[in-house]
Image (tube, rainbow, N blue to C red):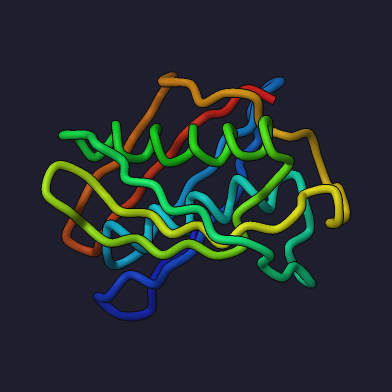
Length: 145
């Protein structure tokens, strides 16, 4: 994993090897940026977002008390929009609200983007981690592909 050069944690994400599934890790100084990095990691695992432009916006409110539940529900939204509308988020704006999170997802047509891997089908709770430490936030999540 990347080691920050100073005491402040830089934001980032990566996919890690996992048998027959997709496992991503994300990190950032803030909870919302860590969630954004997790979404980006999932999307970059199956499409190339380099030239992606947003075509529409989806606004959703996630209601969850635990941070882990917010992470799972946000990624379930990604899977839902991909499965039902063929859309993938190319931009994410997250704002904390009482009892959850307001999400502005800037979406693009997934079919217009180069495919780089298998699309996620579901978020699992297996080895789910979302924690805050002295250097910032970190999460790890596994998705079925």
